[in-house]
Length: 243
Image 1: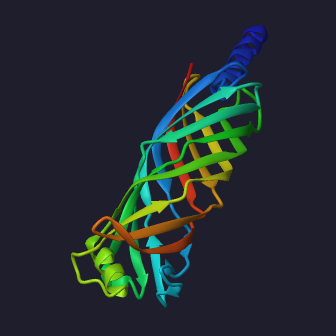
Image 2: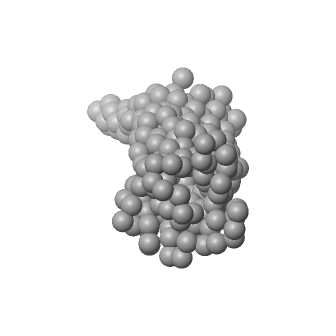
């Protein structure tokens, strides 16, 4: 009777151990993920300044970069039970800029598509069989801004600052692409040996520059610039599947 009770206790203990062990990630695993990827700029801009044909600042002018959410996708490859390489890519969100300071009455100034693939090295704490694991990572991202659009209100204001009547000039913009470091922390939970949920937060210290070119009849009549500190916080909540 005692022997049977002892055996039953061993079986129960083994079941509890198995219940707390999901073989979350181990060396050689590929883990795919998809979910909601946020882009939350902690932004600051310098006043818009004409650099051609004269050097003149628009006092008090500024811009506010709005938050965005998109579909994010990533892949981890576990080099060891604790070290992994992660690639992250999101469906490019359209980042909107609103007027600030003296440009506030204009409302939205423009928008741009953001392509920002990232590559990180990450360390996962704990053991491969742990259901709950914390991680920390460091990497690099390349932020490319394309399809920049300027609203008519800003175009009219820039033309007016140069004494050009409304509707006569057209202004285009270019935002410099930049490499920047990525700092990341996360928490990972395995529901089953293959299915899990991860929440991570990244911080990306980054500065860039926007150059606006105003033309009349195809000829450049003015160039203006502003510097933008983005420093976005990037939360990412996603489901994972291990192969």
